[in-house]
Every structure is written in C-alpha cells, then in structure tokens.
Length: 404
Length: 94
Image (tube, rainbow over all chains, first blue to last red):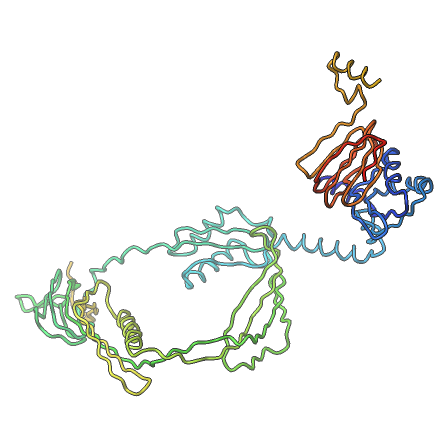
C-alpha cells in the first residue's frame, strides 16, 4: 500500500468528483476500459470522489458523455504538479540549490572544537596540543591526519595523559581525553630539611626515620615548632645536615562557628521570561537582540544550545544559543531550630574537612548552639583529630655538607 | 447449461470459477473483500455496495464502505462489513 502511494505520487494523480445519476455505470465502464480509478469512496455532497492518474484522466471524457455524469477536479496531487509549480519559481530553486551547495562545501570544514574532560587546566594544554595536530576552526577535513597520528601528537605534547582521541562529528571535532594518575613524588634525599609542626597539637607518636626527634610523646607543640631536626651534631663538635624523614602524629583541634538563619529562601517562578537568542553560524555568533537588559529583581538563568545535526552526531555548524531569564519571587519558608542547627553543623564540618591532612582520624566532636535572635542560630563545631602534622622545611645552610 | 458445466467441473476437477464463470472472492476479516470476475457495479453507497456477477448479485452491507480499486476483472472493496448476501438477478432487495 505504501509503495502504491509512492508510485501514484511520482506519476501524479488528480482527485475528481463524479456527479450525476449513473455514477456506478461510469465507474464500471471506466474499469472495463482500463481506466484505473482508486480510493473511490470519499463521498461528497453530490457524488463520489475518486483518484485517477493524469494519463487516464484524458481518457475519461468519452465515458463522461456516455453516462451523462459530470466531473470536477478537486485537487491535483503528485510530483509532476509540484515540478510545474516550482518551474514558475526558478529563483526559489536556485536559492535552494545554492544553500545545498554552501552546506555541502562548508560541511567539509571543522567549525567547532570541543574538549571533553574534567580537568580545566589539562583541557587548556590538550587544546594547545590539538592545534598542533591541525585540528582548528576552519580546518579542511580531508586534509586531517589519521586518528592514531593525532593521538600520539596529543599524548606527546601533554603531560599526565593516558589516552586521547579526536572524533570528527560532522563539522565538530570532539576531543576526549583521560587523565593519568601521577606516580608519587620521589623524595629528594640530597636536599637537607627539617620537619616542623604545621599546626598546634599534642604529640601522640613520633617515628623518625632520618634526622633527630626534638619532641616526645605528650609534648604540646605550636605551629612552626621543630619536630625532627635535619641538623645532627657530631661527637667531634661538628655537625651535618640530613633530609629529615619521619611521621609525627598529634591531637589537633579544629573549631569553626557560624550564624544560620531559621528560614529558607524558596524561589517560585512567576512565569515571566525574557529570552535572548544568538544565531551561531559555523564559528561566528550573531546576536538577535539589541539590548540584553533584564528588569527583573530576582531571576534565574538557563542556557540552551540547539544545533542542527544529521543523525546522532553529524553537526552542520549551524545552531541557536538561547539564554532565558525567568523571573522568580523569593519566599521565606521557616524551618525548625533543630534543622537550622543540623544545616549549620553539616556546613561547618565540610569547612573543617577542607583543612585536614590526608589520613586524619576523628576522635571527638562537639556541637554547641545558641539562639541569637528570633531567626538566627549560632552553631559552633569543635572536632578533635589525630593527624599528621609534620611539614618539610628546607635547611638553607651553604656551609653544611649533605650526608651521602 | 450451468448444471452441465458443474458436472464437467466435477468430473475434470477443474476450478468451478473458470468452468462455470463464477466470481472468486477473497475476504480478509471484515475489512477487505476482493471479487474477481464481476460483471458490474449496480449500487454504491457508504452503507451498501451491490456488485453484479454472472448469475447472482452480491450485496455487501456495512459501514464506511469504499472501493479501493476497480479493474476490468477485479474490484477491491474496503470498510467494515456487516453482511455479504447473494441474491438472484431478478430479486431486488427491499
């Protein structure tokens, strides 16, 4: 049935209305004479509608006279009629052809380069390496080198990469990379250094592997105090310097406090929106607005980029960037005292966690809270950890001889 | 004459629609009907179609009836059929 429809469309057909007394006879005579009528049955007010091919339409005339019926063309359908219509609009055809040619030519170039990765710093160095492969905006696609060659150039020109690949999706080049994990730094034992306290604490344990310990268990230290000295006095009265190595664990106390409100701000959209569109043609952007003033007092911003593509990933380099400002009204929703305290506690714990050294162990935690006024709570979090507090500080002494 | 033809068809085991000039009908559910060897279209409305064959009339009643295609020997009818009746040529349906 579907192929029949395509066949009829290509050959062209007309929908006619047959009126008169002997419609059935007309239909039968047409069939007997080999005039093919199809889709007979769309009843009109006066008669029957039927489809007939263009070539058969001219053979209907004698049958019409014989049966005394009347025929009226309701609609002309199919490709021949479309071609006839477009013949009158030659400039439209020329325009369409030109657009097609421009699209075809421009699709042979790279119009955008996208770097996909988590590390922003690394993305910059990858972008620089990608330029060396010849992939840049305006690059002619057939002249690009093979994927393996591009991969090796990117890997050789960027540090800390384990894998990279350039996908050419239509007019867009997408570079994906995987960041490598750096091996631990090799301790340079030739440079002498001391180990000092990074923060105040109570020493829990001290293990010196190189150098001499200057504190003992249960000693209280302040920030900057010497823990393991890299300078060793010799029995001869001389001294030598070494690279101090050791683990010093101490109790440390972290205290943070903050004021938290007993309400939450909830944004409700009012439905008012302002959209600013930018037309993106290859690598150029054209603003479709004059002023980007937003008169809303409170608003949220959302961005959307729609790009024309063929299939899943073949970008044509044409797109529309839309920035939408939605007005919102802010309402205060009261929250209970306990929720405000809980919110403050989580926030302060997060702040403390950022200060900690790797491998720290929590030993005690205290939360204090008090209501300052009707809508404010003051939360104080005190946490006790056992953490590594040693920090290497180089010894600057030109006369000292390093130990071998 | 038709009885002789029927006997010949029985004896020779040839198809009766060829020997006796009878219509051959193919019906698909109650949606499509194909009648080969029809002799004319007598009535055509949305609710009934009357087709003439060699010695009988076939009356198809139903809803949304339409003729999908008409050829010299075959007629293709579509719609939702309720009944298909055979009447002799002289008996007209009320």
